[in-house]
Image (cartoon, rainbow, N blue to C red; front, top):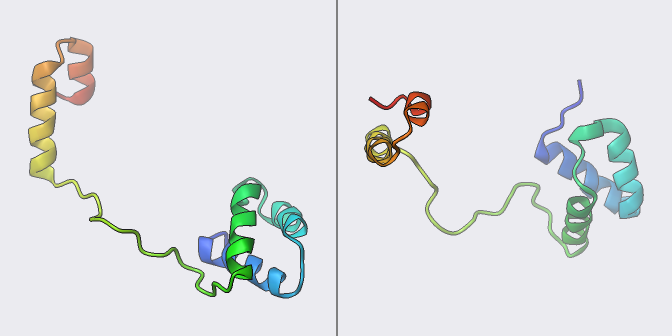
Length: 98
């Protein structure tokens, strides 16, 4: 089974660009190997541009801001307040509201 992780796909793109392969040819080759799990054409072209501009890192760059985290007590508080607003017994049943 082929490794279809992001880093593996990006490494393939980086390697083929270094070999002089054009982005459309890389897309065609990746589509043959990965099928439906292939990157979109637009995304692949963006990664080719990044590597042409000198990027060497295969991982995503860190994004600003705090990561979103849901704690159980906070979620329960939200759920209980939401259940008070919702009047439909069907929705309450789906949300497990009492």
